[in-house]
Image (cartoon, rainbow, N blue to C red; front, side, top):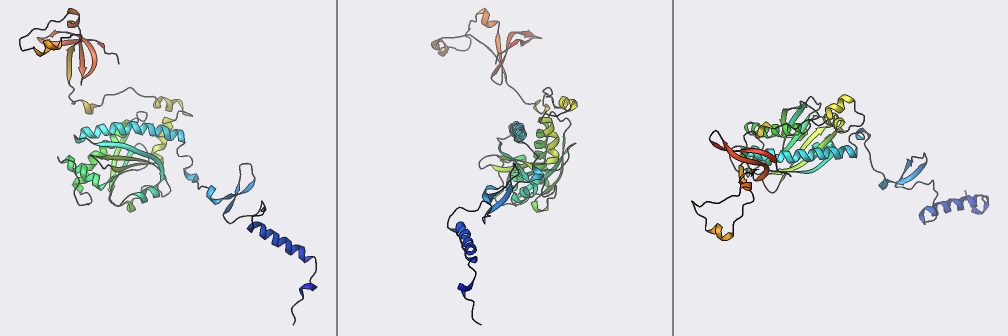
Length: 348
């Protein structure tokens, strides 16, 4: 059979073929494309005005609606300020407990998924599990094993140096690190006066993050990353709380929409003295103000010399606590001992 003769085909097919070629060329040669045509890397989206448009895949970001209501930017800012205060107090508390200079500084505060956080933990990590009654959820305090061994060395009287070879903590060493973890959690609870009677409880330990199952994989977690240590380099410490734990606290930080009872509970309570500082010695010095002597006379002072004071200076002294002026006072005696009657505070 002979092939069909092209010249015998209908003439009305030529415009259709030409139109098809033109449409293909417009997408290749840079001619004006059809607005409704879909490019290989474009995704059809629905705009807020209800129109469908083509957007580049690079301009589209993924969004997890399960975490959309976790923390607003203003709430995250308030909780960051609260944790900055906590970190400063924790550094002082740990330095007193360890009787050594111990640095704690805040690195970042962020929201992460539980599975992502677990996957980011290095292999040599000592994880302490805890609950904060009456709040729900289980929190995690992840210490690098090297830092845990440094704390153990300091608690046993050493300088705070880890061993040369890496290893997991023993049961006795874990019990010593629990003392630091308990102090850590107690200090954190003390910075939430709005939520009374917070009781941190240690519930377990884990050295392998793959075995942790304290929350669903997609659960939202508030992760506070700190840098801590006895010196350089500092080690990263992770303090992680689930959404179920943070949610009641955020309601107290956000007065909008609170009931009257919640607002009353959220009002700052009066400052209370921390009994942990009862036995801290504070130097107390009393001195006279306004007395001046020529430099030459000072070089000739010796035991037995009498220095004259004017009546106005002798009647008022200044009392210093740890070298900081705090009160004006009147010197005298009581029960056969020198004493100072406090008359007024020193203006700050």
